[in-house]
Length: 191
Image 1 (cartoon, rainbow, N blue to C red):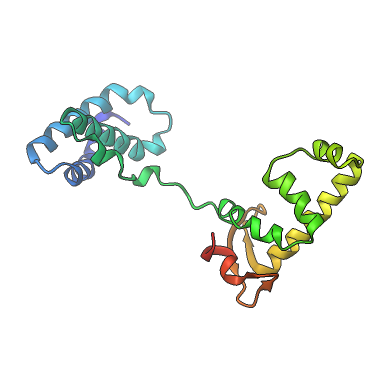
Image 2: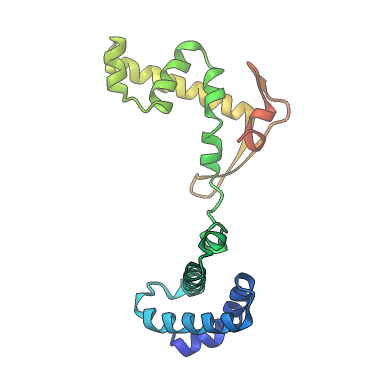
């Protein structure tokens, strides 16, 4: 795709974006010309033609930031989130935030093992040495504790997996209650 083709397709969208960030129409026209020049000069740095729209708007965003920096107003624009930088919802991260109350609902020994290994990041070998038990015994106990935790999670929520077995969604079960972990602490309300 040539610069001319790109510009014909995205010029009006870029101008609208710039108008949303800069009030003065004359400044918008100047910034639009800057974006055109930067696009032309940086065409070789475009790795994937499929990401051209995000690439262009990133150039426009940085051009606006430079404009505000020159005028001493950089903080106003830098704090605004951009649609092309927004992260996808990560269900695993949401549920990871819920793990502490679930671990605390397990029997004391299981809770201690998972707290040390999963939350504190201690290696199983190191923990086995500290507890003065064999490594294989500790591995077994940690696996049992993980199974118990898995059961608590499944008692709390229903899970949806994609075709590859990756977690894509979860829904709290309304009737869940185990050792002071209510449905409101499970899932989207707590995480």
